[in-house]
Image 1 (cartoon, rainbow, N blue to C red):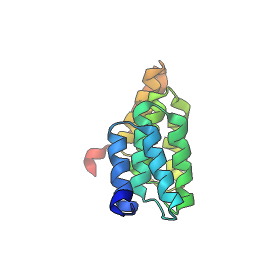
Image 2 (tube, helix red, strand yellow):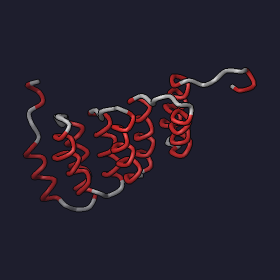
Image 3 (tube, rainbow, N blue to C red):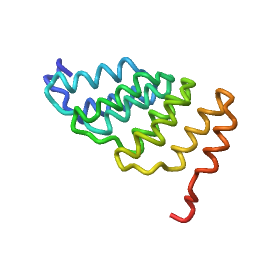
Image 4 (cartoon, rainbow, N blue to C red):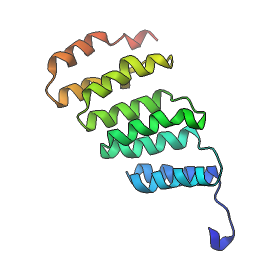
Length: 148
């Protein structure tokens, strides 16, 4: 792009982040997010969610949680997609306590109602480490989403 004298804006960088996310290219996605910041632009929620998803695909739960907690610094409120991607990262990383914290504490603190994907990630995180009792408890907590 510099050869064409085109300065990448948030939209262009966001599209590149999404492409990196689909390929689970965590370092590249994170580098592009940093490039948005260094160009004095504000990243979008979509860009943050894509970088969280890239880390989720690799099971990098610590970075997914860090990105989730960094969103308010960009004046962004995490949404259901943000939380579910971070919970899935915790599930892949075997961090069931963190997945439950996101489900029951962090989502509630931002007035987010868990959806079926939230419960699925939490139940799966317990299953992966053999906590079948907690998985059954969580299953009993799942609301009837068919009435929505």
